[in-house]
Length: 228
Image 1 (cartoon, one colour):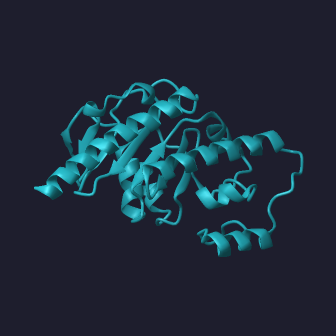
Image 2 (tube, rainbow, N blue to C red):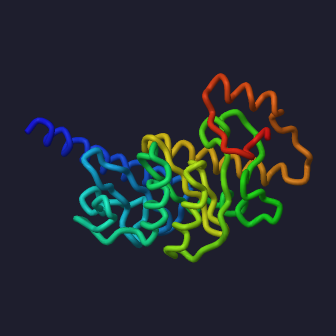
Image 3 (spheres, helix red, strand yellow):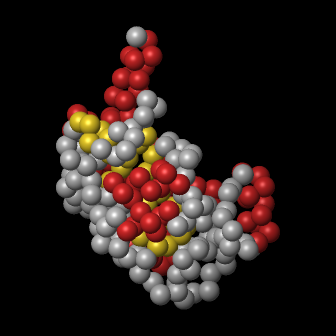
């Protein structure tokens, strides 16, 4: 009985956290209208995800979609059409406990630039970008909700927690909801820096500085990531 009460209490807190972070992201203009979605894994199995056609600024904790381990709706409103995207990232990154997908302006703009390396969408610009995001992959354009995006995510083999969907937006996994939100915000700010400095030959972190961050903070970079 105690375990059941604990699970229920934890789910209630997570529902409130999703709504709180969603409202914060919306109010700061990081995902307009009814764009973007958030999901969190539950300790007892299954996960919570924001509903389809719902604004992150006006979420109702009781109406969040609760899915089982197979991604089937158990309760709440119909889930976001991006369930295949979230499922693929959870399936390939065992440490992921939460996923944030936004349509944040600077990240979307970055995803449309011709020079972007799919293996490292951003250069090593700041220490906190590397510490929070590692390297960011870029996957090709798929229409929103296209199940084929799951294959593209699975093709990354869980090496990236931070991914840009071309002409669409970022999707970022974290070991907590807070970590996923903070990493998404760091990605957006770094994309903004890149656009501000584009064509100005800025000074990036050196391979030695990247190696130091990897050593001191345990930053994990995929093969062919920054500094390779």
